[in-house]
Image (cartoon, rainbow, N blue to C red; front, side, top):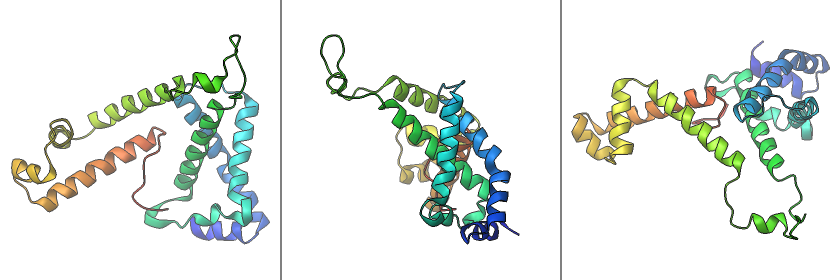
Length: 206
């Protein structure tokens, strides 16, 4: 039985299939939660927070007659495990965003100034900056793993500002080959970046 058939059994109300789903993927989701929190500097999260987040993820799958789980289509070779990984990443990031604004914006400090007034300039929070620095460091590492020709392509296109049409002449290859190389580089960076726990737009649905 493949992943799609397994999911179809779950959404049709097969209790045994759902029990197997929980048994098979609980540890995977739990580990991804800890991995994502660790990447954002939360190395020893409160057990209650992890448990709540874990429960929220599984509840989101079955909410409204398994609406989210029904979106899994096993397209483009996407496995159920990789799909659940992305669901967990997205849900955990949402959790981190909500955690930043859990303090009442109306609460005043000792000077009588409300938190909402202190934040009126929309300055990035410490967590925002930490996430940005993490992303930059990991992206630099992913770029360093590219082949020399691909790094040179990025240097010309991004750092020196040459257009794709100009790169065609510089590299002495056809425009189609230029577009293909750019797509290949983006895909490799996307795969590397996501393996590190960060979300990047996917080229196709699962």
